[in-house]
Amino acid sequence: MDRAKERILAHSTVYDVALKAGVSIATVSRVINAPDKVNPETRQRVLEAISKLHYVPKAEAAARARKGTGRIGVIAPFFAYPSFIQRLRGVASALAALPYELTVYNVDNSAHRDGLVASVSLTRRLDGLILMALPFNEATVENLISHSLATVSIECAHPSFSSIEIDDANGGRIAARYLIEKGHRKLAFIGESNLPEYAFPTSDHRLDGYRAAIQSASLELNPVYIAYTAHKIEDAFQAVLQMLNLPEPPTAVFCASDTHAMGALQAARQRGIRVPDELAILGFDDLDIASYLGLTTIRQHLDESGRRAVELLMSRLTHPERPTQHVRLPLELVVRETA
Picture 1 (cartoon, rainbow, N blue to C red):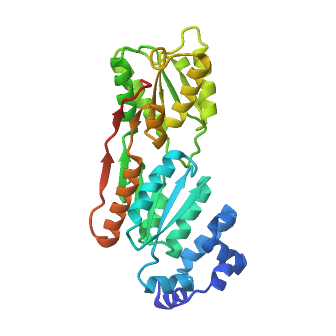
Picture 2: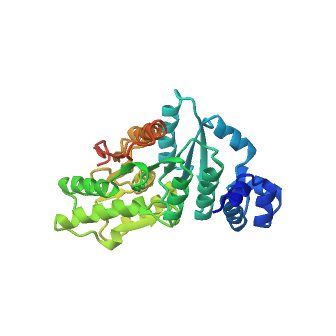
Picture 3: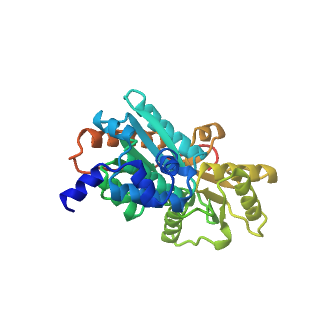
């Protein structure tokens, strides 16, 4: 690029962006300040124009001059999931003593995810970003790197970012081994269905480990004992009821979340089936409510994962030259009354 062109780009205005993208300046403003309120095609066109013109909004330019916005962002799907709330609680507690505000973005489709990442990267509205259980493609990675936005990922690992990793497959293996040691042979699994492409498939990984451990014990996971439902107590309740109506129902069920396990408990209670004598129930997450229910579960240290993510992010902000760090938090079997 010649110097004359560099000077033009350096002084690009919102009018230049609007002209190049073929939109109004009001639309450009919405893309910068409320990207979720702009349709994906228009948003992408504006973001590409911003990138090509090297446009920096005046307010953001001032923030850069102050060497920081004082904001940390979290982008995540499934905002209402209890596991997300506990993990976010860990993030918030770690930031409480630091001079940063927390901004949370809920993602409900892949275009929204890509638009949010592009927007916060280009406009520098954040000092750092935490991607929570959110897969990303190479274009997203390149976007974050090229705009030097410090990023930490939880669950999804990439060499370019520090990350907090959960070995979901190992959680499934732990569950299977425990139930087999308890003498169970008719083992069932309840996982999450209709998972969108922008979300990390934790259920699948947990099932993979569960099935592998069962096969290693020279046993079989019968397909009729596998069910996928929405992440709702009622849906899991219905799925387990159907299993209990089989001529030979399972004697143990591993649920890919504590939410599913609560549905399994409800089904057993309605049918008058004694837990764990007639049906052992094992969950995954160790939500706050699990101890009150006496639920045996796989603990994944949700609060701790949020706190550690903030620690890794602060390390990147303080010492950006340091190599990326990848922390794998251990899973722990918590034995209570249900299995």
